[in-house]
Image (cartoon, rainbow, N blue to C red):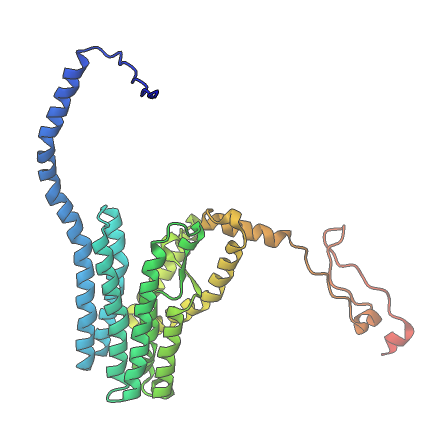
Length: 344
């Protein structure tokens, strides 16, 4: 029986003196590795501490908001919820900037979102507007469970590596921080205008159910993480920031209502943009600014609607729309009126 011989490995043409040199370098690297790990340990621990500390501070702010709301300090409670939302927005960015993104950090952030934007707004609305009412507690539970389900779905979507590139520009449903601010709108109305139909149990409960539906729905909303500011819009944006700061210091609840209205009004535009890019696979990986330029080009390429014909009265009187003529854009005179028309 013939046996198959394994092919021989090619002989190395390196000189024998190269091996001791290589071995020496390996020995030096191995000896220096524990020292490098010892120096790298505290720096890595410091990078992990900062974003996790921000997340813990956000949890403390949210839970303290419930405590002060139960004591009647509604303004302070709303400020703490906004502070929790701001801390939630920067902890992830700080972790990415410092290179400290870890799995445990992502889990802590998700649990913090469930507390700050699910449990806390539900309890504040219940304690402030629907105390000692079982149906109000049921509405609070519906909203809180919807936020938890929304966060669980977000965690599964973010791990999908096969999703198209354009999905990074849109959220599926309303994000938890935005849903929390929207859910607190009845409290803002009560603080600004006092009690009324907007603080009644059916309106408050229906509003919480509506926000819960927005959170668990598949309605696309714009993501600010991929938004870029063009240089020509910088001055106008700074003016808006100044106006927002003035409203925040003087009429904070008016600013809250304007922000919620603007956010809800942007949803149809985000839905239209998401449908446009989803139907064009060639633009899935393009930058949002490139997609906007392509949409404008498509809009300009579409044929315009024909002008409406003149009405019978305009034709009888010889009236025409002003059009630019060859002699500097003067209007063309209509036909001279007949004798009957001049008598009229």
